[in-house]
Length: 480
Image 1 (cartoon, one colour):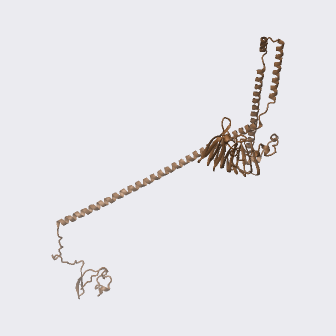
Image 2 (tube, rainbow, N blue to C red):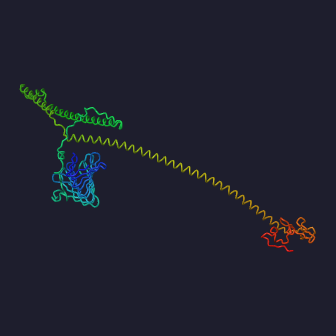
Image 3 (cartoon, rainbow, N blue to C red):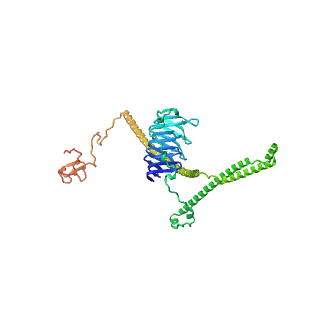
């Protein structure tokens, strides 16, 4: 909502004027611009360069006064409590009464203190920050911070120029006093009965696409009707109780004025008054009683009804109590849902944690099993290698022992004997020697490689035969 140009706001517990305002239900903040002034409790005024109000439900929860903040509370026709600061945050209770304020950025204040039902002392304060608490609309406790300067002295010593702070401006003359100050338009008479007497629409297509929607609408209308009837019944009962109380009061007054005739007769006997005069007195008393009864009836008929403003306030408080109860129930339900969600989330988290731990344990167990198998394999390999090393060591030891035993014996080796009995003579074996006899030369030559001797194959130069050539690694040559 936006409003521009000479804005006025009226409610029975809060009134405001400013140049322009803006309200957004997304953040529930009403912003008032260009010299806004607000009044509450009938005697308290708030002003600043700009004013932000946080709306909670259907009441103002807190108000932020930005730049040149000023709070004025009227104590009497001439004296005003005043708080001034760069910024002031004011907090309100559910009835719209101020319960606390915080003044920041260099605060100055003047408080008029009451003693024995009379204002007797004035207190002037200057401090960096100030906080105050209110009880039943009156100042209860004040807290000062950061080296406050506090002066108190009797009212007679207060000069006229010291009665107000700089920037004081009591603007009660521009305060809206009622809805007539906002608009001269009136609400037309209700036509609910006319519309309720008509047949209800069926909404067939709506029921197809939005089943149950119109039933909920009609149910809410029926609930509203029942609440109106309940309020009307309560008002009638309240009125009947007040009329009965007034009638009881009048009856008690009549009874107190009606004197029994017996007591009058006794009084007459004691005073020796004639009976005729007593009868006249009795008749006059009965006439007075009748006139009082008639007056009582007329008073009962002409009894003033309750103040409309009080009834509206009571009705508003009842509605507010119902809204608060509904909101509390809604919050309780939401809290239960949040608690259930939190419990489910915690259980899910614990389950994931447990599964993770089990997975880690399985992984650790598998790793341990692999480590055991690997250790067993290493042990077997070590044992086999140890056995081989022991066997080699034993063989080496045995060989060393045999060599040592041979060295100790010192027995020289014997040379082999040939057939002629001459040691060391070499006699070629018949199987290894062949005789070459062609009539010209007879020689014995050792057997050759495959292919026979060159001379046998008609070759005179053995070097020409590659089969009879010496291998490359042999450098010896035969000599004839």
